[in-house]
Length: 127
Image: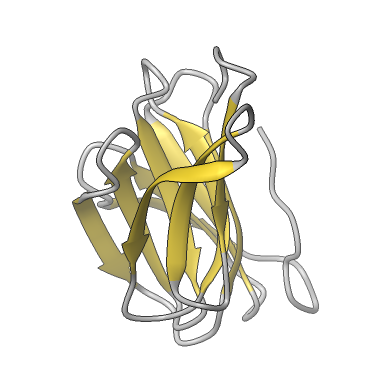
């Protein structure tokens, strides 16, 4: 968690997102997704949301406290390899194995822009 070093979040090929207590060394909450999760980033205006990239090319926004879905979109057929919140919490960038980077409105995941130029999979994105 950006403001709480005793809390962190993970995602995995087991189709789960887990919110952890570092002190207890145990998950506080978890959710099961329809596809393997490949990336995530904690963000939003108040660090209250998670952006999650999936192996099937989908991007999700989850509430950080309950891990319930707020928004979802799928523009790609290949895996989302990285997701990042913009510093102001207004956008989410998604790096894809198909060489594209999509930038979405964080409110409802409407597409704001698509960036192209890489010759192979985009492994990481940052603002």
